[in-house]
Image (cartoon, rainbow, N blue to C red; front, side):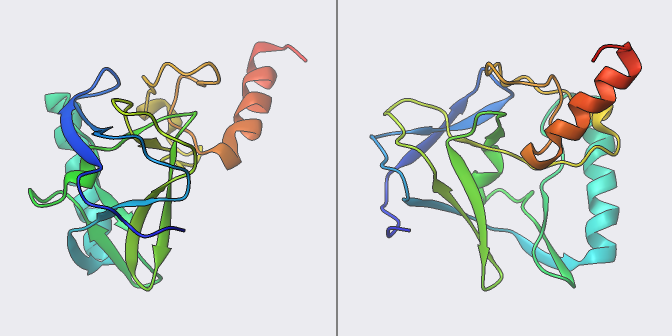
Length: 166
């Protein structure tokens, strides 16, 4: 992973959802772009805040949950004004990836990103309550729901089972 450079991104309105982060310049694959920052909290507090944020999002239609699993005992609540990384939207065909190293959450590029492109990563949600997380990324391989790549085959099989198709 290459070193982070300043001025790589800016926040503006997104066609995916609300606000997004967009490349201000061409970004090469393997660049550390931004740190996801916020308040370190206990797992119990993380669960509580996640539920509160989700309920608020359902009422307002704005961003949803900004709580990240940091390690075995702590979460990180990124719902703070000084965390622009909270605006990075999910995509089923992402150009970034999350890396947690030494209790710090970094977003780095996994593809070359052109100036003006929106940054995105796979939120990695499991299948539990998938119907509560519709996806609006518009990519060719979009499943219609925010489901992590590692769960997409299971989801396809689940759909086949319910539709009776093979």
